[in-house]
Image (cartoon, rainbow, N blue to C red; front, top):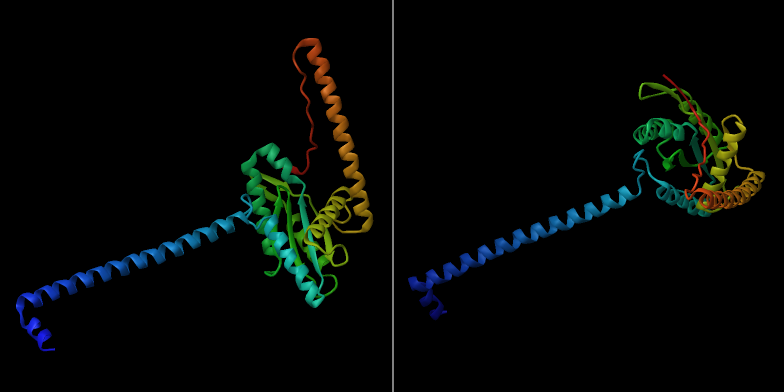
Length: 271
């Protein structure tokens, strides 16, 4: 103690100790600043990663959740059903006019249509019903069913919401919606199967115009399987015929003939 007191009494020694203390304080401040910046960078990286993950789950055109997000939501309903037995419905909305808009007015107009349809759907459903855009002309949602008739009532509401003409690029566009519904557990017990069967019911409603919406039925699945088999057979025949035409044209003139596929115009646009 006497030695320490003697050293502190020495002005030179005291000056050195004060200098060391200042250096220590400065280094501590630097380390604290670096630590704060490191924590901030970690938070920013985590936020950027979360935002990137969220963007991957959103449809670019409509801003709605995409197919992946919807399937995850259906999976949650499947797991919930296994616990409490509550049914749920998957509803798919097809917009017949979408392909026509993209062909006639361009991709930007098609994106504007997707956003407008998404807005109408969001305003129509409950907050607990997850809406997604699952294709260029398809939207879907999953809803818990707490009482009979909920899915049919919502399908009618969606048709009403989409019935009014949509102003687009100086025109009035008829959306021509078709809706398909599949119910958990009656129609399927997995997310993929429920979505596929709701899409099949939507296609049936589009072709038959059964009041604008259609619940899945077993005969629809059989019909879809027959159509898929026929489509594959037709595609094979078309490709074979196309190859034969190209070969024949090439042999005769040295220039292959073009093979085109026409598309049927859907939807009505009035200026």
